Image 1 (cartoon, one colour):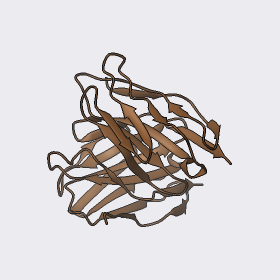
Image 2 (cartoon, chains in turn yellow, purple; image 1 turned 30 degrees about the vertical axis):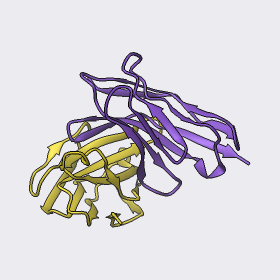
Image 3 (cartoon, rainbow over the protein chains, first blue to last red; image 1 turned 135 degrees about the vertical axis):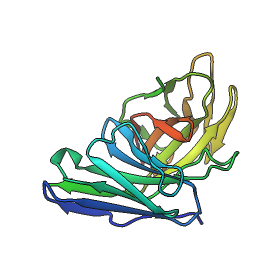
Length: 115
Length: 110
């Protein structure tokens, strides 16, 4: 059974703190993604990675960075958390294999509150 | 650019009612189209997809047909259950990335 896990379900941080969100997938997928989910806005892509040490900016990368040192792990970093980064963060992965690359598999999400 | 527009919710239905959630898209070419579902407290999971015009995706009693003439991919189910209460997202694929609509909350009452 495919699995994407995220390090925390709920997280509370203070303004200015450095925050790390971890995501691990066990499907040997090449692609990994970080989204944030806000009511009325759907999911917006922050960053994605199509290979180890490779990354590309999504639609809303400002205030975030990412790290992919191993194929199975993709980390989202908030360098200096701000209250407008309070949100639900979702990680996903997908394969590049033709015919199956359409499907993204999602983790359960991390609800981050920045005070 | 590429975008997806869904009907606003919440949609509230009684059990066994007919469901339609509208989705239209703007894109160059003919992208693959998807419906994802998010049950309370969980991440998203793929519900169904269609990869070319006139394809019909179906799963768990849900259906959606890729209509290029109207650039639409409306989700339908003939008889909803309380367990279908969730948030439904329409999406299109752009390269390796997905572009999502805002999501539609469905509430089914017994």
